[in-house]
Image: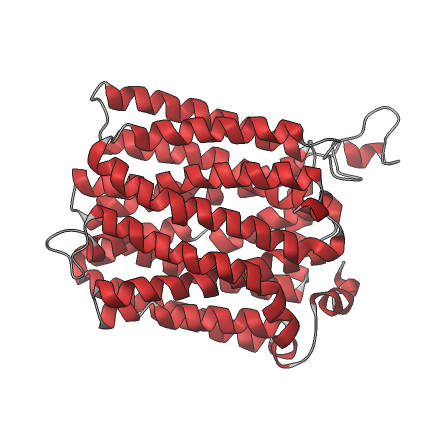
Length: 429
């Protein structure tokens, strides 16, 4: 890590703490919801509230990331999350927590997450050399998985059963610490030539561009994304996969947890499943660079998305803890490896001054359907059963992978690298 620099070390440490907080909330909040209701529709609202801010705010958050100091945006977003969750902790201690307050807390924390995450992905290329991006993203992704699932998930399972208020209190402290750690990063992290950022002595030479409205920045990002064949294909595929996976996992807790469930896990066992996922994800994150070198980035990514989609059928066909845990490990290995590759590809293909905005446009397409998928999963499960949602979501994932292979067939079948894709699309810029 030392070779990646001191600023990266602070960024990595902050990422580890904030994702530990994310892990406690990601597992703890649906388990709390299940303790309040067994309605698939109501339980799915937790997942919908978590991802709804991406649909509503991604484009504006990306534009801000290209106008402001990205590190400062991350600091403020983490501190805001800490304050919100501290207030919810107090309500829980007083015995005032209910499902609707839970949903409000998740929604507000998700708003801050949008700003923090978009700025984090945009600030990383400013902290490490360009040729170290995949390695750095692998380190960051492993920290995310360890925090989200390897540690945060089992802790959440225990807290729900013993101290529900700490499901919010612990993340509040962790987000505060994550924000303070970022202050150790030296230097300015305002994008070069970013719009709306001109100050005396460091202007862009185009004052009209510097003063242009935010909607013009957003429109420029959308045009860039849609005109870039590779990024457009990846974004559309990611959108279908995330929509389907949101429907799947919004109700999967009902399939897996409780006496009446198909798998019959206790809350702590559900947390253990997420830990198994994280154990695989750590390896997947660190092996992504080597796999891409052996097979090519696009071919490896297509293979990851195909296999991870097929694995969704395993808990449906064989609903047992003995098959769920090894499947979760494979989900982690393959999912994390694919995630590292697609993030690194975006960071190489998007110019630095557009990185925040185009990343936000990509994630709007890629993640904007997640709240809709989660809500749809709950409604369909209410009328057609949980199994119908799980199998249907798998089918949508396979359709998405098929569309990707068709749209990017030359990249997947040939030796084309991300840099070659950049050259191929240079005319569209």
